[in-house]
Image (cartoon, rainbow, N blue to C red; front, side, top):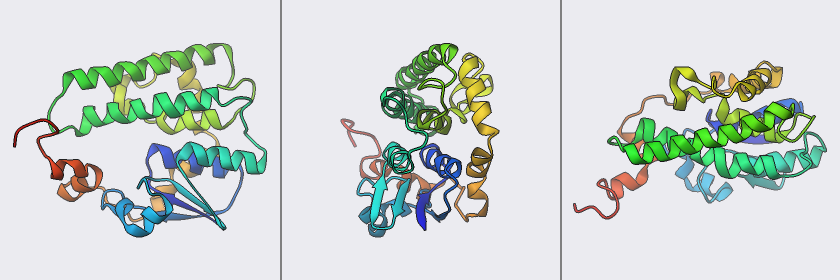
Length: 226
């Protein structure tokens, strides 16, 4: 059986969605990133980068959410894009900029207006590109639902964490697609996958060390005097 190393964050959720759409049975193996389990040697043997998700398919191990999406879509010949352009726009643009925006909005040790503005504006710019595309196309890659849309869903379903109560209201076509995907049975199952897992929720000193180990190495940041 497939093994999905999982924490209920945007990138693992993309993979859980595709597994559900493909109707593939899989075992969910929790990786509690708040406890630092992503840094354990056993997990680093699966993904040297120490990130979730990881998919183990027999003797094949694949890490990085977009690599897993492509692997599964190619193996099962479903949900494949005609090109990788829109999938890669989400991978190299929306995903990392969203992650950085969330960090500086919610987890930076002190307000950093320049960094916050930089990343939030880039998130907005990427959503504007996606909005323009979806204004003329039912899905990102054309007429068919595919892994580029699933990749978008992973981050866009939590857009309120960046945009507040406004959510995706400035991007109605993106919002409509995200809602359409969220109503699908595979997405409902993916979104509730964490319900049966025992995961830490407290954001305490242990969590800080697990998520941001550089802080304990140099809490004042690079270039600052201690």
